[in-house]
Amino acid sequence: MPAFNWKAAARYQFTEDHEHLFLLVRGVPIDDGSCRQAGELLRKHHQREVFDPTVLQRYYDAAVSLAAFVAVNGGIDIGKVRPESFRLKGAPVALLALCALVLFVSNWDMNAAITAFSRLLLAPAPSDLTLGNVIGLNPFHEYAAWRLVIVSGQVAAKSPGELDYNRQLAATEAALREQHRRWKEQQS
Image (cartoon, rainbow, N blue to C red; front, side):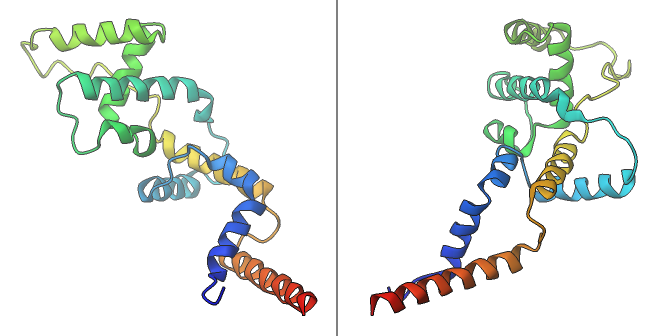
């Protein structure tokens, strides 16, 4: 193949060789905002013991599912982020916090939470908007960034020595070229 793409072949081989690492990050939203926030969390909390929010994974997933359902069916303006991308980009923070609260008071039963949310949406407007914030704590604050910090540590712990991706890719390409050269020698 005169136009064989060695770089693409090296990327494919790298992915095959390190499939166990890619399985660790499957489903973890990795975007610029989460990466930036994860870096800030690392600097701020380096060498400190912190709460591992990933133990809340099933609750987080439920809150995101409810947020997506409400965004699609609730008739409320949720901003620019489309509900289909809440899993990857995260739900709007206020909506996610409210969904977590509604799920909590519904004993994490999705049907009961949807019923409770529909009652909220049908409730009359409050007479005084200055009565305060009913949600004092968002249990999923910085969740995506913390999850990225944790999975990064897992990937680093299971990675073979060298963590320089470009260097590993170059070495993989060189090995593939050498393997091809030896094969070609045997063919002649």
